Length: 128
Image 1 (tube, helix red, strand yellow):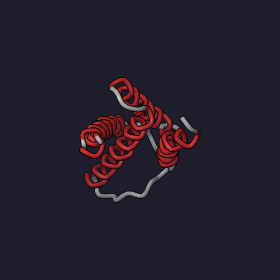
Image 2 (cartoon, one colour; image 1 turned 90 degrees about the vertical axis):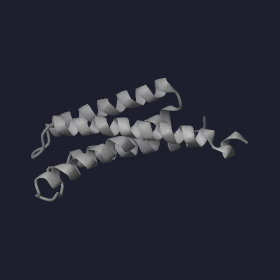
Image 3 (cartoon, one colour; image 1 turned 135 degrees about the horizontal axis):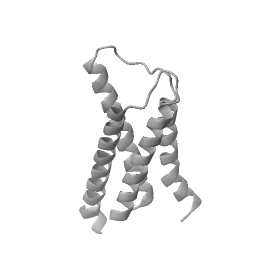
Image 4 (spheres, one colour; image 1 turned 180 degrees about the vertical axis):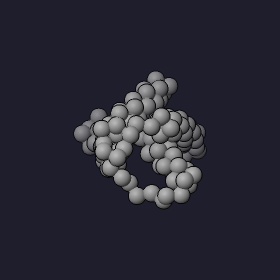
């Protein structure tokens, strides 16, 4: 595998993890002070961030059940480390609710990635 191919696979994973780390290091992210709407937006953001991370891990690790399980495990471990990291950021705290949506995002991201890769592999263009 070429260096370019490695970069194309792994750079997005590292960059996305860096983005999550950067966001977690912010003492106060802008958000509406609207009670349930704030919770909805925060939960959706956690779900999205970790869905993308899980899909990027799956893309980098390759096809197969073992790779997908490893992608899930690595994403959840990163979610745990993210909550731990937030416990040291002034104005932030570790939140089990956020972790739950990180895990939900992990599952949705992997399910979407698996669905997409299977659909592509079954398309007429990929068979020729």
